[in-house]
Length: 316
Image (cartoon, rainbow, N blue to C red; front, side):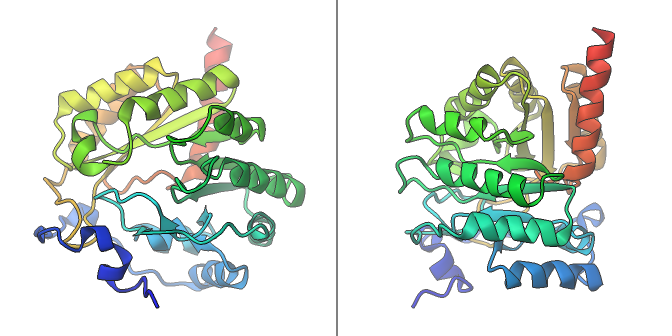
């Protein structure tokens, strides 16, 4: 029986990798341990509905803060991913069959938590012909039915091996925000994100805008993996050429010694400089801090994103 709490079983593809030293985190990275009534209530709701969260599976440093406020990013289609990215703590292997009742349970949890904004993500499912696109669409529709006042943000895989109709189906379900992370600069893809293709991911984001020009698009990268500033600025230019509205940049944190090493800890001043540069390139919304993650403060950021577009249209 596979125990996903044991690193060698959770990440069999990384078992033979040499250990990489895990440097001590600087003071600006420290976070409080998850506690509080809100945290426990969110955790209990997830357990009650048999749901998986990326907050736990990916070891997010913000889980205490977010769950205490009743916010959680739900991860659909199981807890086992078909990819083996060297930065990611989600388990790798052969996933189970899709749970056809999961969209309804997700929607019920959203309603119970009373969420104004929800983020839905997933593992990669290269074993499915549509990459799980239909399951994403069903989940969006279920939330619309049970919690019509909730805005929906999705963080999708790249649908690399799927026909174009897969993306069409997801966009047709009309999420409020379509997020797909580029994760890192193109030069680091072979060692950081070997199962993905940079320009395919970029084209995916561009196609969303072609299908529905009014849909908000979002993407993010990690820094501290070995990239340089010029490469990060080039990624910003690439995203803007693809019409991306919202950029997130956060510090990469190494989950275990078998994962990709932290090259360095980027300082808060450098993050502030990235934010200024991104706004200068025309992004409607930018979140660039050491602890920024794709869904960190997503609800508040979505409100600011809508306000920024309204202001932009007013100026136009």
